[in-house]
Amino acid sequence: MNNKTKKNEMSWDSYDSERLKKLDLGKIKTPAYIIDEFILEKNLKILADVRKKTGCKILLAQKAFSAYSTYPLLRKYLDGVCASGLNEAMLGRDYFNKEVHVFAPAYSDEDFDKLVKISNHIILNSCSQLERFKKKIKQIKNVEFGIRLNPEYSEIEVELYNPAARYSHMGLRIEDLKGIDLSIVSGFHFHVLCEQNSDTLERVLKKLEKKFAKYLILPNIKWVNFGGGHHITRQDYDVDKLCKLINNFKLKYKKQVILEPGEAIGLNAGILVSSVLDIKQNEINIAIMDTSATAHMPDTLEMPYTPKIIDAGKSGEKKNTYRLVGATCLAGDVIGDYSFNEKLKIGSKLVFSDMANYTMVKNNTFNGINLPSIYKYTKKGKIMLIKSFGYKDFKDRLS
Ligand SMILES: Cc1ncc(COP(=O)(O)O)c(C=O)c1O
Image (tube, rainbow, N blue to C red):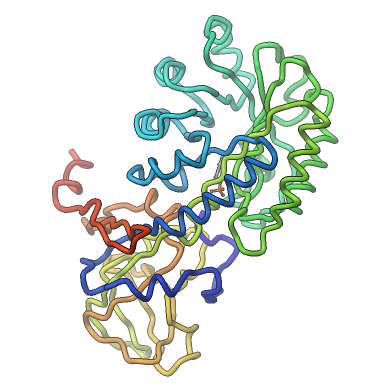
């Protein structure tokens, strides 16, 4: 989830702003997401290096980023996709066309039957699902099945994003494994990280091993999927430690390691450009934007966090402070308070950074607001419109 731990931080260090400055925003019809292929590839090269040094598999977590027009680039560096259910699995099969690994909290019979035809790994979340599909699993030859473990340890502070929180429905705890037949599974999966560095992974692995070691050594277990939340492409991420952890784990348990990051792939590789529609005052200056917190960047309200804007300061830091709000009826559709050197005008364009992850996949058309167009910023510096949205897209979701 976008910027979960970086709330209110406004530095631009990790951004390739020279490239961004060359962008002719005048040509962009707002609101619009712009995916930067150069930064995407920069991230992918870091991940490819981890694959090379460890032999682990790295999958794209499509729940974070599934702009499939970029899949031809992504598939050069990654092993495949992970999917949160049937539709993402189909997208991965159709457009990525490498490995497809699926985890969902529960599967219907109908989805399960379709998934076994297009997936390489299917991960189950409960004993009862294992029991329900046991007969079929025994008959299926070319799909490997796994179960998700809950290590009951996580350093995620926000409950909304914590799969190891008390009462969590994610994964099986150690006591849930008692007496269950694991002979039909080939692997384990866990996911308890969120925008975290490899020191957190180290502590998670310690807890996992302490609880589940006797299961990790089972000969039928071929792989362990370490989930997502590894912020590998962030500047301060300790990649060497990650490689050491993976290599040690492989040496100790002789298992294939799989990572399924989302954020690390699209980190800083997308911006959202938005225009000021109107300016008004109510004790403070308010700029009404053609984008929306609730419709186009829902994590800003769910988390909550304040997205970064290029060349903007925090409230009061620069000469002109504004509250930026969205163009929907929700009174709380507030993006945040920012300050600028120049006064904002109707038509001023603002650039929100790090908007590829979780934003493009979670947006909606609340109030009939248009979804932002999608542009690609190519490595050669060309700006290409991939898709724009209108009345038909809004209407097609309704009945
Ligand atoms: C099971 C699973 N795998 C992978 C991910 C991707 O995580 P991230 O985008 O933080 O790397 C998530 C995110 O919620 C997840 O739930």
